[in-house]
Image: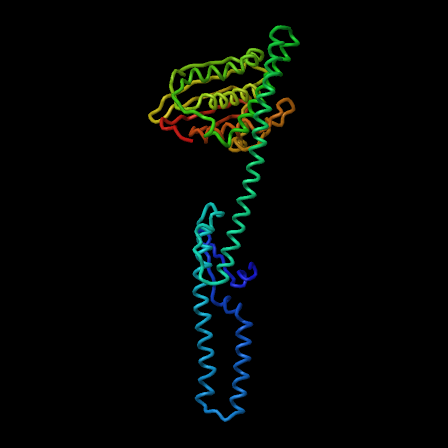
Length: 358
């Protein structure tokens, strides 16, 4: 069937997008064999008519009517098939979800078109079955990951209790590492759920000060250990968001500020908010090592670590900011990042007053 479709030489012409055409010259080329056989048949008939005593009118009328009827038949065939195939290709070029093409194809009134539609229907059915199979496997894996995360939280909590009851310089270092493990576990959980935020979110009015304090609390041990100054102000504002998800986002941003701090001078993280006419903007600024100018546009890409992330003592995964951007998009929050190398980084979270949607 593919060869048959190709034989009609359906052409694509790029003119500010893709446009489909089926050219009559190529259609006639496809009919070259039948035209040749017809010509041979007519020649044979003419030879026979010359041999037998037949009038000139008959000699002219017979080949003329045969040629005329044949040309009429292929002209009708060309018009029918051209309309059908060009419509398919035009729909295909304009359709964003191209797998839905079968739903938009009308039942054709010629055999080859019916075969093509049947092939597309069978292919579509097979694709849906395969997608459902992979979807089931993905859901099964996701459920396992979530179960594992909930199970691992128990030994983490137990380890933290043991450390809390045996305070010394060694257990203090162990506690910091346990905090890192806990953060990575939390990141894994949110990553597993990031494609289905709508099933795990609840938008309501939330106080920014409470949200920021929760995120700070998650990192208090590291902030104290590294002697990082925290400056919070102008945060007593309400935004429409999901507390759990926005706390996770802020937690990732604070961890980045901690990880990429300067080692030779006092580190500082400033978090504050400003109220605008149509939005509330939450700012997070630090005086860390900053980001190279050419890398700023790529920081939200999945797996991008940049120059800073490739440092021996940083060991970045390139997932944190990617998750932040993905979740912000789902929650209707705009996230912007600006940075100057060796000066610091500024991140803005813009909460629109109408952010009630995914």
